[in-house]
Image (tube, rainbow, N blue to C red; front, side, top):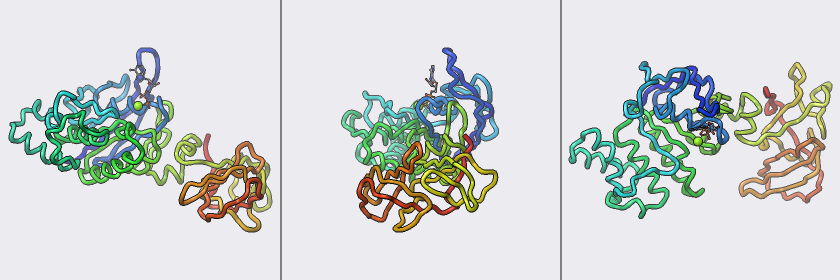
Length: 343
Ligand SMILES: Nc1ncnc2c1ncn2[C@@H]1O[C@H](COP(=O)(O)OP(=O)(O)O)[C@@H](O)[C@H]1O
Ligand SMILES: [Mg+2]
């Protein structure tokens, strides 16, 4: 299986009640790439996926698979496999029956279907489960069957809409890493919808962050986290500390609780940093505040430090030190971890 490039050009989709689900969407998904579409509920993720699938036609704009315009092709002529959150398996067929369903329609002989079915059962780790009934399977096994069924006809594109959302946390993590290996070994172009940032980071070669039907940012997980395009992206992917700037000083910026090292011009209204980039100091730091909360998270603790700003600072500390509530905490910040954002 090899994937195809997918290109959306100026796609817009409004529903009859006037809801604009997707607006002026322009993006290219490279052949063999896994794109994670991430965003809050209602931002247009599923609609985007359904337009790529051919289940929804854009009102405006075009969709290309490689060089061919597929905008008006229905799903059965697009060569896509699809996996949904809620399995959507046929309960009256056994596992094998579900997997070969699409192959039968495509006219494969029984011998070819059996061979392909055995390959897929092995691919998703369900050897010896071909004769099982769907209701005898766990949630994770059902989702593997759904994946095998989607892959059976060797599609050019695999589309997954929150495929792990219905599973419990531990299983979700295991299936996530299996899915990751599978997508990498198949080198199929895949688009994966999720509202879970951890999932998007783990599975996506790139992440498309959507906000109200539009592209907020499309980049690698690392770039999304380290160079978020705006405040929406930054606060949606990871946690964020905001320092409203009071005034510039000789060497930096005066903020509530202290002074930050900063050289940039013009003077920003607000500077930001991530919780893991604040370091708890024994003596002096750049900012000081009172500990108002401490949450043990295993490898690290999350501290809430009130510096007199609107929100307490979030500090992720791995030093294992337990502080008393109300203790004075000094925090150091390296200049390069501070950044500004477009609103
Ligand atoms: N068939 C539909 N009819 C009317 N509105 C819809 C329909 N499908 C989705 N919407 C609306 O379009 C917006 C985007 O929906 P959707 O793409 O499902 O978002 P997401 O998958 O990100 O949660 C939402 O406001 C949703 O209510
Ligand atoms: Mg959805």
